Amino acid sequence: MTAQAATPPKKAPKLVTRKSANSVEVFERVDDGRFVGYALTKGVVDEKDQPLTLSWVGAKIPLTEWHKFLAFAQFIFERDNSECQANLMYDMIDNKWVIWAFPQEGQTGMTAKEIENEEAQRQRAQFFPAVELDANGRTLKGPDGKPVRRWTCLGSVHTHCSASAFQSGTDEANERNRDGLHITIGKMRDASYDLHVRMYYRGLAYTNPPLASWFDCDAIVERADSAMRALGFSLTADQRKAIITSELAKKAPADTTYPQQWVDNVVITVNPRVPAAYGGMQGGNASDYASYQHAGSGFHTKTYGAPEWKVRAVLEELVKIKKLSPEDIQDVVEFFEKNEVGFAMARGFSRVSFITPDEYEKVLDALQELQVKLWEREVAASDDERDLARENRQEMMNYLGE
Image 1 (spheres, rainbow, N blue to C red):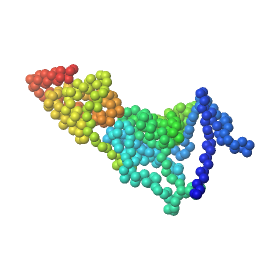
Image 2: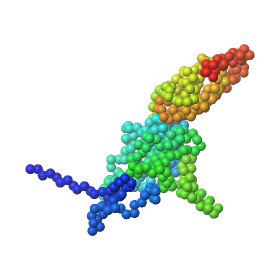
Image 3: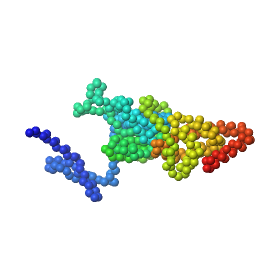
Image 4: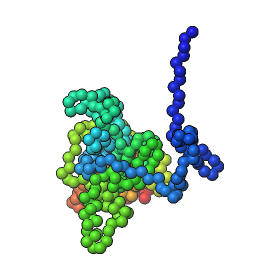
């Protein structure tokens, strides 16, 4: 007869909760030499009387490290009109921070997405080797003699391009079980960024975490506080928070550098996109778009549906076919400016929409350059040619349903 191994006793939990219709009671494990078991925990209060706050007490993220990511993100936005992301890596041995942008897919519609490939594995191995070694090449061990890890990921940062900063449903799902600080950066075309910050620990979200405990802005706050004290005042907690938030929302200094590897890690996959993405738009923007798309469908398809950018050639072709005048082009310019909000919203919530904020600049520049050329040409034209141009203009306006 074979003896079965005894099942080890289950370790008793430290805390147990009991829910009733109107309350939740918390019990703690006790063993005081008189009683063994669970007793009602003393000193428990409602969160209305004690807000559930949690602060980071480790080393702070240097502003120079933060600026590296801001400069990198601004470059990717301006070059590719793409979002990007990075992880906040914390060295638990030397208590320092490194922000690192691992291989990732760009232009994914405000949802940054890391890529799992051989290069990503190589870069992750730099932070998470199979065995951590000390300065002497020996296995790094803690006070208990067990091997320890040096690096841990304690947060993330990603951009929303020119859209505002917010936590999307995808962000929430990705961050819920990742302890640390998570930041979204938006309005990258503006003079200062829009920030949305939250913290997670053990699956619980903490909104508006104290940034003073995460970022090394002490010297900046102290200068402001010193100036206030000289006037007989002192900074309030809200003023301190505002100073730090404002500092983090500033553009990176012009001379900020970042690893070229980050740029190489951003992979842009160009997929043909079709105008049908806007079929579900509602209201005035939808009707405006429908009439204009009908009149200039070749313009939209050729410009945005192909990987290459040929806006000037397409516009010139459109002018030749439709006999557009400078006034007509001005109407087109005004249309783009009027509908920018609608297009930006469609791009934010539809991965098949084809126009991007960066492309607006190229479209408007090309339209305006072409407009100037046509104005010059029309001024030099004869009276008969000007009359013909006006007839063509009216014909086009009728065609557009104006």
